[in-house]
Length: 391
Image (cartoon, rainbow, N blue to C red; front, side, top):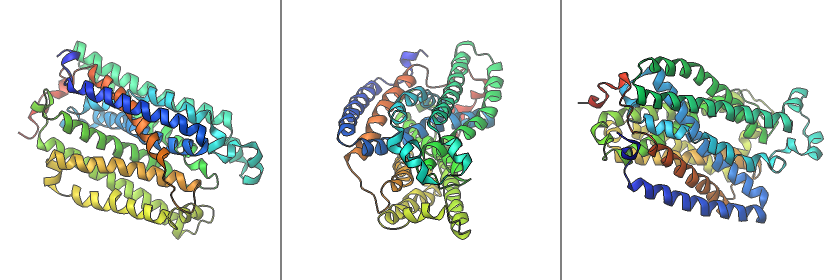
């Protein structure tokens, strides 16, 4: 199979339309920056977190597949690899935030630092040069992981070298540790430090699960769009989607467990420095957003994903996946925006323009990466029998 045969030609239109819509939305974001720079940057941060989560989650699930194997991973491997290859684009899209730190973070404004009453370690940690250095380290680590996961996979396509399987496994074990470590610190830097008084040891773990949930949801939607087209039409079966539904259910349950565990420890422990973080997000207008997350981020998907019929009907499962992606954006919005609007959400056009703009450019890049290689890793020795999954 040549690269030109790897993806149906109608996806060229998807790429073009995504790029146009994303470009127009980003132009609107540029206009919004001149009208209200602080609001635009807040909206941009939420949108950025969503699409970066999908990119990083693709790399994490890909490494998980290389470690544990299983037929479920071969059909979506190119989707995951293409998603991971968008991390350099996300590094570029982070620059507007990096150049405007004082508009987002109180610790980056010298005139406000004295009033924060931070302990010595936080004063040392929350310094702009150190923050920038850590951010560069995060993206370098993520880009290197994505680069070698893709490089060796494509090398396997060319040569059929069975030793590359071991190479990918040796990378994926430490790679998942690096992923967890870097995502944890990025969550602390980019989100937790919006309110420097808040502290939680579970916060980073929540941010490790959110990308996996968002990426698995995106992979389900992508696989559904490709399932009736060659070559995936000869590989994907209802049992594959049953596996994907089980993974979605696992990530939904893990996210809910960690989120509730963090709340329970802080609230039951009467931790005075941390409780205000929750009171802002569980009172006033934000209470309704919290209820929305509980219902449609956990309860409804949990019930639906328990059903084998839902999981084996790809259109139904794709609908659940789309809802989970939307709720991922709501979750990031709920975590970020109360730092600036404690009385309730103030949803505006910038809140929609930013994720649409970033997402349009991201999808265009994703499709271009997907077009660059065959849709199936046909020369992976573990692939034998994958097409028979469920027959």
